[in-house]
Image (cartoon, rainbow, N blue to C red; front, side, top):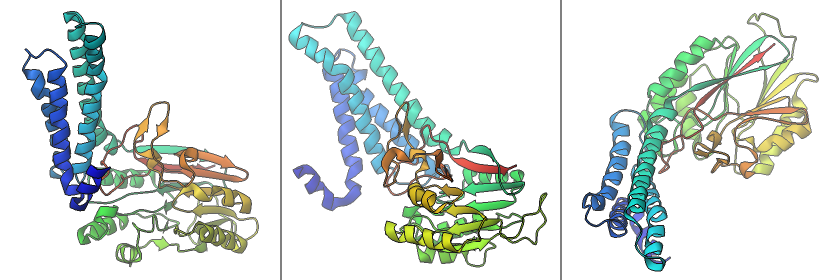
Length: 385
């Protein structure tokens, strides 16, 4: 579209002005297609967008999240406009083809429009202020080679340490895991090169401890870059697996001792070369001790077919955030997986392999809204019996 091509050179800085334009159109539609004598209607659209802007701009000031507000405000204003058009164009068509609507019907339409916008405001507030901090713990009980508690943490996406991360640390400590497994994306993409963000991520991860150790893999290549991984992990008591295999050390007593080689972790680096990642998994599996219980750590769920083919027992992944924004009866709008909606969140079984796909802790970066809807953050606890 010519208008888009014209605006693109100015970057995302133009978005607040587009949002203001949409808000003005919203107020105009409200006023034009309803009772002009009610002057407050013409300002209502601007009031809705002003409330959206206030909710978004308050987030960093309250220390809750730190993403840009321009694009989310644009999206919210567009949603307001769609609500207005959806409610009031039927009234316009009625005027055109059947005559003016009755006063009663007009009042009902206005009340419905107000209710929709109030509902949208409540939804925006909930998705920005409530659900991102409603950290849940998912408990899974499976048969394993020993009595063991494993905690999986994924997609922490640190911008700054907020009450969500503090709650995560407190919950992990209370869970007293034998083993902690981290499945990638430790900082947020738009904060990736921020020294303070890296320090905060390092300070957070330094507080994770477990008797059998803490093991990690990199996440998305553009997020967990080599400089990020070096600065965040160097010197920490965390083993970063880079296309590596490790047998869990047996020097720490468990309630039921593990036999030699019974538990093997496979850490595969997520790259943009899917065939390479498949080959790396196959190579590591060929090195695993025969009869050992294998746990694959790979950032996204896309290796399930290969994991089942080579006989992985348990596969832990993240990346999708459960969609982060989900719709009732439909689920995730976007998953980030090469297989689309095949993988969204939760447990999947294929052949001998069980995949658990975590919703993660943090949220997507760049200009995406720091919001969660029907996909709360998640700590995963696997209790082997």
